[in-house]
Length: 269
Image 1 (tube, rainbow, N blue to C red):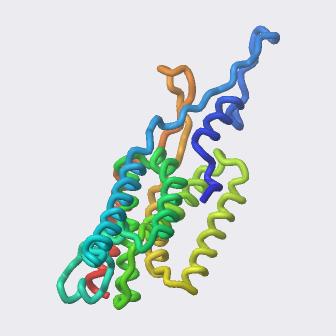
Image 2: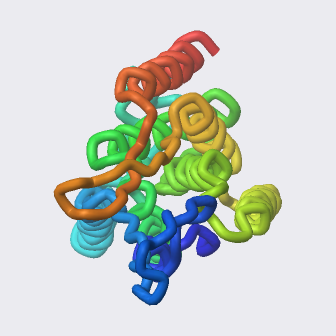
Image 3: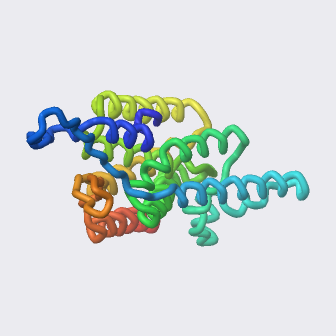
């Protein structure tokens, strides 16, 4: 997860180097120092990332207080993915609420660290609304596959959405490999992280079906409509800036197709 270059590091590097592949025009004054080309990144703060993190932490506090005061984890009982309740009582919300619930302090700390490590960079390039939709859709997809493949087990955790984010991170690097140093190594490390986590999930209580569902949904969305970054002149700031050349229409179509696919799977399988 840490192979994705930090926004600040990339920006600092861009500010101190010329744009790869671009030759500055010859200056009439050969002694005049050449000014470095500055590449501006999208000016977005990770607002949605922090909101998701904060809501998830508050929900976990509610879980702890409920178990301490009432003797039972009411939020988990009401929101965990559990097939029989979905089938018999049509509690379809259990396919989305698990991404805000966690089973232990270690569980939530690990997942929230992963969200903190990956979320800001993806939110910067996807945008606030698209990042939120991506998080919810991949989390939903992971719970759908878990519901279809292991309906009798209950599961909670944000890792369904986080696996989708890992897939998006990999495609972001691959589609924009010219902007990343050692992109092959970064993609290799992402694949290794996915492989190791899935292997660990096979020998523990982790919900591997949920991980796989989130990963598949994230890969579909990122493959069809992941950001393709291009450089354009920003005359107002006297420099260059990166912008996403993928249209909103294409991205929302990818969101719609992915969501529809998993809705049909939940209803029919």
